[in-house]
Image (cartoon, rainbow, N blue to C red; front, top):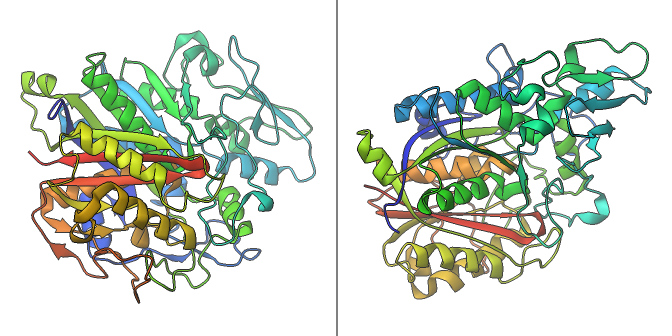
Length: 479
């Protein structure tokens, strides 16, 4: 199937700013974006640090997630030379914008208001920001569910056995009158609130943005796309799962074009969950694969990519940036928070992707963008999983974790790191693992420590893992 799926455009935003040049100045230079965040009061937590965009009129949090996704989607379509009216699928990896939930409840202290999103055929009554019909439930990550120092990913939308759950963004569930655009129809996306003092607009008006299916509809409406819509909520592999599903649809001939997107902006609800699980680094640095690694830090990340069948891109004269010859997904269901100690699921996903790409031994592989959270359990298990997948070649293939600069982007990690792997191929530069100090005997691969490295890779592998044992792998190949 090599060459069936091509990449023709992308848009990306991280704490470094917008676009590829921002990634080159930050990620590829090995400069961490961590700083004390003022987005919310960090006084109750063990650390104030995150890779969050600065405050101010152009800051990411002032966009809201819907706007960040729309901007990246527009940039991706512009690069691809596509526009409104394109028959393209939208596949979105996101847990919803829960900033709106936090702000809503804090604006009405002590008030037990109930919230519902109106729309035919749905009973989406919510209390405390939890959707009762399961459209986009955000589970509470209790301290007992998390492992100290581990990647305490979120429970929202993750099936207990680690299987990726897809939510179909049906118009009837989220938008009245069958419209995918914001504000289309008298009650489009309407939110009703109970209790005294509730008023239209403000925090309450955007509570519906916590529903991933609604964000998929809003994105499709903003971009003017007319294809099917899917929302993936399977934690830290969500946007990678969206890309994999799009590749399957394109390679099977079911669609010609897909816009895949994902997003997470640092907000207090998830920050508090990771802090309570003791997963956050206390010293303000993320040191993947180092012996003294002490945890992860969260970061802003939003990206979109345009995928097309090779034939469709040729017919319209589009220039492919790269192809996606292989993909794989697997679950080990070892533990709700800990990875399998031998990286079994990750190895299976990587082997699937390499076999589909026609390179089962990874002979053509020149770079691996690792999940690399900087947590005690993840990095050793990931190293063993890569050794299992790549065999004797594992020690000679450069591997780096760009979470050492961007932070952990949760649902957006897969797609932002997909763009980073793409730039590594097209620029001929490997991004380093920043903050690397001293080797760990359990982590014995070539981690491109601290400095970028000139290289000429033909293919790159990017891998991600999530709560519940979900694992994804994607192979990219330059033209």
